[in-house]
Length: 233
View (cartoon, rainbow, N blue to C red):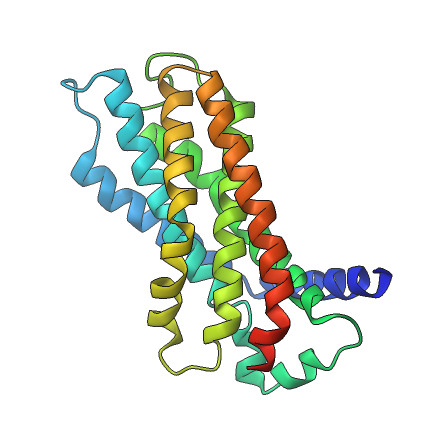
């Protein structure tokens, strides 16, 4: 257990240092999220004819579409650095369980995605005129929704990033494989965010967040157990 935790933290710290030093993946992810929000904002921007609930639903859908696509962009770099440097096999030889490599890579992907989400969420709400659409924005609950949603995206895309890293068409295959898995996250986050923006906290929001928590925990556990077989394949 200790060797696994040390390995996971070492991999995560290395990836976060590289991301902070080069900033290429972070900037690409942030630019992609901003571009998607801008395009959707121009096409679906605020309208006086919409009710507060409709405005909240449109904003939530656009925001989580941008974050879901950004997660796929960020996860493409999870294992690509080692693959391009010819060091992927050496990474798998590190002492410790292979599942810890997945956890470390997940943390390395999750950090930049959370930073992008912290910028994208308030920007998207302002862009779509949804900040206070019907009620004051419950920021703590919205932050928890964002954390759980981004974690779900990162968990799914990181695992499939390990499967597609050695394939020539990995840029196209990763979204095609990962998106069907993260559809429940998209639905839950959009529903929870729309309810928070239009009505505030409610029991239904709590149900969606409970579902997101169960999905995240289940996905991480399952991916950690399956990662050794994916890596060896």
